[in-house]
Image (tube, one colour):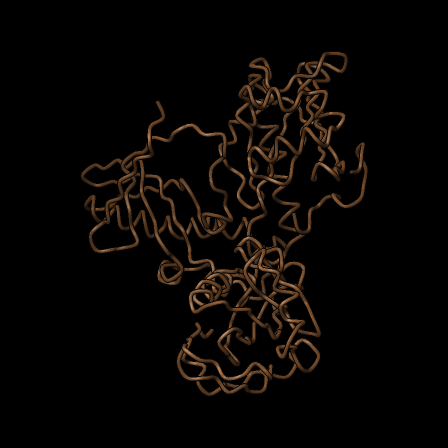
Length: 448
């Protein structure tokens, strides 16, 4: 019997952002949990230990949380900020950090008359954190990668047979112990059930068999795989080869040799090796996808609208997109909106970011054409009287669409950057290759 998830949150008096998790039971399912890009974990620090002593337990609790929120922000900044530029950010006080906090929760609380201990989880406001880094000229990774499905093939020695889903595969168990520790490039491990066993064998993984890998990815709703092939070269040495990409384009991304530390048992040794690999992937991804401070530029975007509800939904997703820093409505008709977007990154990077929000982006005549994914928006703009006029990333306003009806006052098109009359009617927030090799899947993945 599968138990439904049960989680009760209690709002702590005096601070609506604080919630205490009481407990949960999760059912078993083939699909994996939501990832950082889906839940906002890019800007979340989990399980930060906090402790304080004071004249009373209440004072100790307040002091511990205040210091813990500063420590939690440091965790997030170490994850996303360019390590060569972090020194530009001066030490922040609790009063400076507090406005960046979205929500926080506490677990494992222990209290005496004069002390307080707990584990603190803080979710920060992503746009506010990005503004902080931009203000100090610090580059950063604005969002997480799409999740990567890990296939951990293991050999107990160079001449020993490869194993994958077997209970005797300690490398598989080591990856399962990672428990979602990677955030910027989330790594997920298949359950290894009968369906996985019949879908992909260790021999097929090492070949690689593109069809088998594609079937495994489809089962878990993912599109990128990391083959982590661990070979024991002795009792204290593990050699790891990494191959990354899609089933049609796998690339060897390198490898590393991990040695056992003094006093480490085999399980701890392999778990540390898996953590080292995951950390390297995350670091490589961050460094390859840094958004440089000062790289914001303005583009003119045309948004295809089928209804008022389309506008509400698309506007909401644009506001959530990490690489869209500001949005201004320039002109609007019944079936189209012209926007000025301030974005970070080139069109390809923004396209990938919007795809995660369920939106498509194409370019035509210097304009960015945005619509719901799968709507065929690119073709829609090329026909009829709605062809954009002008050229360049900030071309002239769209004309020829006719007066809008049914959604409030029509907007009079304005020059780029201007404010059109009637724009407030729909308000916007201001502000198959075979074998391994190099090629399309080469590491680091600039846009996985």
